[in-house]
Structure formats: structure tokens, C-alpha cells
Image (tube, rainbow, N blue to C red; front, side):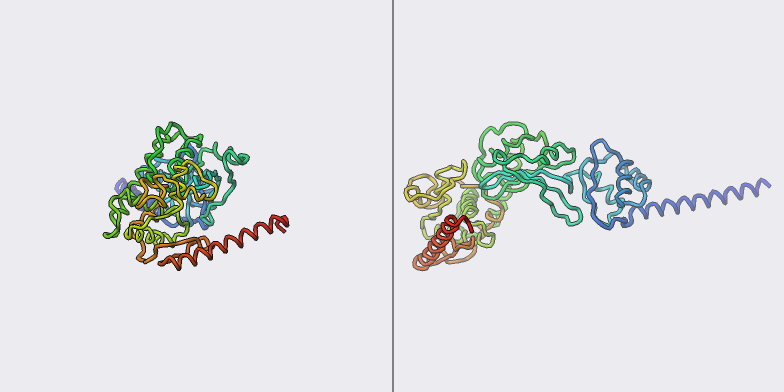
Length: 394
């Protein structure tokens, strides 16, 4: 009898272990399987939250099939204690395992609302935008110019949210003074900037910042990134460039950056200046004259006078031969590479063509025709503007 009971007990134990193993295998399969989400969502994990709250939020949003399996899987992978606060984009079909990895890996948030401080050539603006998970595109909620526009209420409320991201976006062609002044004006940052960085030393890019970040540390990050970009361009430069150092390359790239806003033209513009250097011709580029007047501290805001084109400053390339002594702005990677690898052309002249781009020429005669066409376009635009003004724009 006891033998029969023992035999049954062993049988039940084996069956129990078998069933338990099956449940574990099933749970593991569910944890790693494609999730039920059919439309992207933005998962917000508040500071001080835990896996129980996160798992329930995921169930409510239709991202996972079981809160219990989600938590057990996180425990099994020893990731429960690694939960990070933030806003995380969860794509359709993402598995529980992948979601756990996203919310415990850390790093920058990938969705939600962000405040972007845009440092542009002509102005500084602040933008509040939010990622639409379904289109994976940011939707603008508000934009204003500090000191000029009324500050929208959404800006104040967004700044106070724990999961809001902050970003400083530096445009190509801004000066180091402009970057420094912009950082000084961002009240969520702390610390002083001892001195304006050398012109050209800061990489135009988008930088994520956090409340309390040190301004000098952000400047150092920009400088380190630009140093890498300059080294990369210098390493990839054409061997016959009339450029003697990485600093000269940076100077040339800054001029290219200021001369054209058309990406496809950068190589051609760079070729004009390289051809002029090879022929010992003066560069004769207006942005260098402007820098000699402003030294990068603000925007000139008007056309150049004839007297200014003749004025002797270290940067006036109508007066000096060769490159100016310093960059005239902070060039981006594309302009650095254009200066390092310019197009192969015979162009030594260019002038605006009325479309936002330039007309290039190899001879003075051809260039004079292009200049005449540009002056005609300017005259027609001036007449049209005067006509609109006299009729009230109707």
C-alpha cells in the first residue's frame, strides 16, 4: 500500500514539474514574443515609479498582454531595480523583453514633450514641441522669441513637467559670441562662461541639456565635438589643397558656410576660393568684411557700404591677400568637408542668381553678365516692393 502511495506521489511530482516547466516555457515565450501593440505609444515613466505601475500602464495602453509576466521577466533578468524615468517611444509589436530593455537602459528620452532653444544666425527662438508617436514626427505647440514675444503659458507649464526634455540647437554659421550669449540667457542652466570661445571652435549641432547643467561644460562638449569634426575633415582633405593647417581649413570652411545656404553649392563655393588661393587672387567675400565690422558680436542688419569694402581690417578679403586670421563663424560638418574636398571646377567668380543660389563663372566677362542679371532682379524686386507699399499690398 505504502509503495503504491509513494509511486503515485512520484508520478504527481513528475507531472507537477512537467507542468511547471511548461508554464515557464510558455511564460518565457510570451515575454519574448511580438507584443499586441498595433500603434506606437509614448510611455511616460515618472520619477519614483516602479515596475508594477509601469506594467499596469502598459496593459492599459494595450502594449503588453500580462502585467505579471512583464514583472516576472524583469525580475528574472535582474532589471527591476534599474527602471529609469523618462518618456520612451514603444513601437508596434515590441515584445515585453524589449520594453524592459528600453525602460531600464537609460539615456535620452525618445518621445514626449521637449523645449528647444534654437540659436540661429539672425535670432534666438524657443520652441515647445511634442512627438506624435503614430507619425514619429514632432508637432510644434508654441514658438516665441525671448525678449520680443509674449511667453506662452504652455512654455511655463511644460518646463515644470518632470519628463520634459530640453535641447539647445545651434545652427551652422552662428558665431561663438552668439552661442555664449544664448547659453547665458537659458535660465535652467547654471555657471558662468569665463570667456568667449575661439571663433569656429564650437560644433553646430543639437545638444540635450538638463536643468542645472553647467554652461561651461556644454561649451566644452561643443568644442570637443568640433575638434573631432575638424580632425576628420583634415584627415580626408585633398592632398593638393593650398591649405597649410587644420586651422586654415576651419577658416575656409567658415567662409563657405557664410557664403551659401544651399547644400549642393558648398563644393562649388569652396572650389572658387581654392582656385583663387592657387592663383594668388584675393578672396573678395562680403561675409569676411562683415565680420571685420561686427567681430561676430551681433548681426550687421544692413548692406555693406563702399567705404567698408575698402576699410582695412584683418578680415577684409577685399584688402588682404589669402585667408583672414581667424574663422568668421562656426561651420558645420558639411562645410568642413566641402573645404577639405572641394569640387573640381575652373570657377573663380560667383554672384547671387535670385533663387537663393549663385551663378558661377570662369571669366570676368561672364561674371559681369551674371552681376548685371542680379542687379536687374534686385531692381525689379525693389520696384515690386514699392508698388505693393503704395497700394497697401493689394
